[in-house]
Image 1 (cartoon, rainbow, N blue to C red):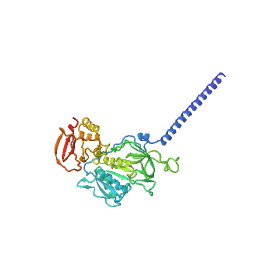
Image 2 (cartoon, rainbow, N blue to C red):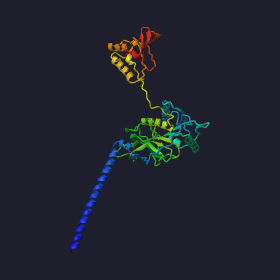
Image 3 (tube, one colour):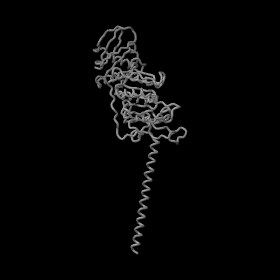
Image 4 (cartoon, rainbow, N blue to C red):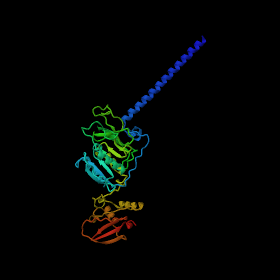
Amino acid sequence: MNLAVKLRRNLRRLVILLATFCMVSVIISAYYLYTGSAQELDSADRGIGLDCDDLRAFPFRQAEPRTPKPMDPSRKDPVVLVFVESQYSQLGQDIIAILESNQFRYHAEIAPGKGDIPPLTHKGRGRYALVIYENALKYAGMDAWNRDLLDKYCVEYSVGVIAFHRASENSQPVLHLKGFPLTLRTNLALRDCCVNPRSPLLYVTRAEVDRGPLPGEDWTVFQSNHSTYEPVLLAKPRPSSDDANKPTQTGLHGLQATVVQDLGLYDGVQRVLFGQGLGYWLHRLILVDAIAYLTGRKLSRSLDRYILVDIDDIFVGKKGTRMNVDDVKVRALLSYLKPGFQKETPFLSFWLRTSGSKQQEFDSRLCLKEGSVASQGVSTANQQINFVLPRTSLFVFCHFGKHLWAVSSKSLFA
């Protein structure tokens, strides 16, 4: 009897313990499920700043960094071969304008439908360091003979390819690029573009976020499971204009690649593919970076920038706006603090001593003659004269009467 009572009590305790454990497990599971879904919804509604910093959110996932084969700039001329749709196409003109503004040599050709491509080599040396196609479909749809010639040339001479895809109203929503493990989704409206900080081709462009809607609704995004493709620019689909509660019109979620880099792991040719034209300002920067990267920096500009300041108004400005004595002292201080500071000062003698008293004192301090005359010579008429002496020390030409004096800055503030 006592044994049965004890068993019953122990069984009751065991049931209570199991029920308590199950309830605690259900509560903990519900908590984590709720917080996880809330974080997903919250991250979908927020901007993509955190997503751009976390490469796990990219649709092109990578287990480890992939290093493409370095581009060899030797054995080829620094010339870009550009295949355009026509000599009047807007995108073709934009590409050529960027090449000309950067002083890159190029050769433009109408993209052949099934015709021959121009000669690519001359006496064992490559004629072109880069190939740009205005229409990516024309590039992918080349006949087998020309495509094989171009691919062999790109592999042997380490030449990259840049191509653009611009969707139209008649474009298929989903299409596969012929000959590539790549899927294109077209005619999308996107927002919040970010730059992949791990992209190896970044040179001028910085890895930041451009928030807001992207111009146009004809964007193309790239999707692939092959490890050769690395995203360069990514953006989120814009919500449907008909129903703001719907996430997108196409069912796409998360970041989508609008510019991808082919690292050459598929067929040995490195490429950069753009999902729109050059109307978006970031595409212009990425194009310059892609040209520099795919040519091994052979076609690139220095990162040094120079600013030219036009300072005519310090001499010919209206009364009260011209420089005074304090400004002259600052110029002298800059020369002292920054050795080698170069100043090239133009001076319009017609305007000498034509302003207020403070500005006239500036003219006098800047054009002192005592102990500072470096040369005397040119006889001039009463007319405006603008001389610049390009030397490291400042020389100012001052016109007194009919003589032109060159005054050295070294004794101006003795």
